[in-house]
Image (cartoon, helix red, strand yellow):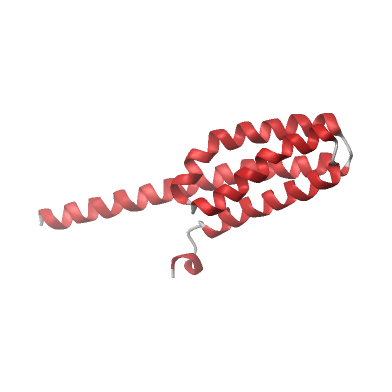
Length: 126
């Protein structure tokens, strides 16, 4: 009887950790994607000053959230996103709004892909 109780408790613990991890990843990716969308919009509006501020904010968000994301996601995907995000402030400072719009859009899509891929859904589990 004790083995059954311990097994059930361990199962509940593992499921709780998984749900917590996916929830934290979802929140992190959502925050980052919203910021990247704002960068894209500032590039579309040709608002260089706002773009510079938002790209610096994106770097701060990335540095904060990257640790959580790296625990649950393949590092090759993270490396691509990191390189793209690190290039955004340079593009904003140069005033290259067309390239900034393109790069921020790509990064946002990659972040959304991670978010969708890691959700607890039947197609992701089986």
